[in-house]
Length: 172
Image 1 (tube, helix red, strand yellow):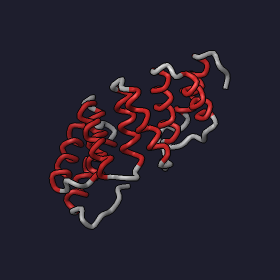
Image 2 (cartoon, one colour):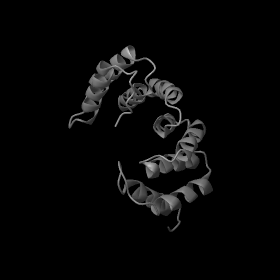
Image 3 (cartoon, helix red, strand yellow):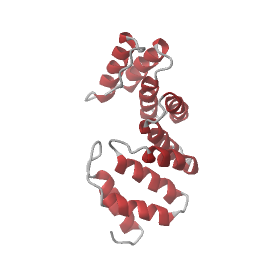
């Protein structure tokens, strides 16, 4: 659900919804979604929600550098919103920029995300693991396996955390 703002035009809101529909269809069309989000930004250039969704569409097309830049803009425009912070953390991990990803994951998690907390903790654990900070990763994996499944990944983060603990010869 996108935050409502009277300063956002109905046309920009409609374009954002259309882009989301392209993103979530049975056969996602991220190119079409990207076009919708860009048009929404042209109409409402200070609307962080459109930047957040554009970053996601760019990441889905493996345009990671541009996704990171766009997520940074969303962070500036959506202060206090954990979503763009966590997204940037993921994009940086995908770009093998593990040390840079950590503060974005930590700040996003400190803002108590409404959903995907286990996913974010798994991303943070991956960054620690890739940097050789195994004890920090282990602590997160142990925390994740005790969490309740939630949207969007349900049990997947817990299963991945268990696999990582086994991989590192540890029991939960």
